[in-house]
Image 1 (spheres, one colour):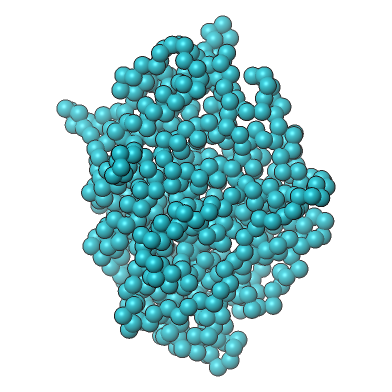
Image 2 (cartoon, helix red, strand yellow; image 1 turned 60 degrees about the vertical axis):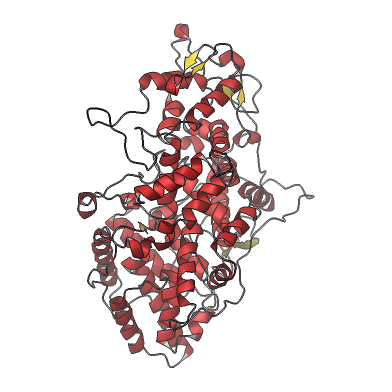
Length: 633
């Protein structure tokens, strides 16, 4: 079999550390499997944690139909261009574009993008109807006999409910047609972070689904509206303790909570230091960074965010609220709001006597109009979608669009996203800046890319009453298996910081690599092992040993793959490898690795359908376990 300890294949300079780590994990994996390249029998499902039992199902209203669910795209793939075709480079560019703009490409989408062009495709996506996580989740609760929004929160079924929310998230990511909107929402969820790792949001399943919808709704709207919607969202109110934040009362030793005031500046709008339009740090006369705010400004802004509580409470200190409190914007209680004069950034004064809503609007405007917002936010969006180290000129071009979309509008997210994707650096950076362009794929995107490429189908779940559900994408355990779970970061600072520099060659070169912050030897090994489970014998032609349904409390089962096209090419390994190279690597598989893999595939028996199936599993596993697959370029 080919080894993956091949020389440095002209990958970005920061890739050396990744390659060494992944090669180390691959060696351990081979030893742990006895060498040889994978399983020879259906793999066991990974052990599941023991969750609390779900609450007794409550009979659902019989008149409520279950109508809103997604299904995988099972259309026959068109034939991709061969390496010698005049359309090959266009197809490769389409794959690169779709890796940046979606959760992954498949052959049909590649062909469609080639047919309509990139700008028209973006316009299609902006106009595409939004998939609603909360609506899908509520209908799923009804289907399971649960009350979607119970009047009293029940801790005993929190885990069971969150499994359903996770299923919906993955099904939208893999099967939804509003790919660009959902991919941008995923990027925004790593800027406006909430997480149910925190105990405070553990049972707020509907609230998190609604928060995802909020980000997706505003993905192509205006950033000011997004900032205000996040500010008044009860999930953010709970996560960063703005809910029930009240004005100062010296007699009761109460002071306004500063948590949200600090993070809305540091993380959601302007950052810690003043920036030039291109994202570079502004320096004072002593050659030191200029702080954007100080503790006084935090205290002043914290007074703005007083007097807000859940929308469903009648009295300020009501602690029993309805199930809708998770999804409705917080409402104000004027008696608990600090209505005195306040001084915000850039010397702006908020007059005394304003209502809570007026103060909020003025404060949002104050932040939104700060010069830092455009470079601070645009650079992070470029990092999440395109490349870890955008050039200052790239950042400046997108920040300019943020400041004015050409029609006098500031903060137009649709224009910003279109600018990011169509910029010359996004399109040609892989060839013009080969040493610095690209990014490490975060685990969620890596797995989604595989599953979308091969039209992943879900698995049925055996419900507590013994009935079988529709097919689900059950990957709630992605944090354990790959090192990352949607809405599962351990702090408001996301899974990784946007300026993270791993020690060694990357840091010494003055580069950043945010996703490396969650790349550890243990996570690499876990992820590589899970790839084996996700590929071998998980094709949809296999007699599915899980056809009778998985347990309702299982948190992870790899979906089934549609590999008919790949099986049809198994007798011709050159054609198979060429297809996978284009589909998964945008044709960028280094030649030396390509030749080694081809030599190995040619050495495998392939005289019958079983041997050909194993050959496809081997090819797919070795390619996706290779370090080159971990990099988006």
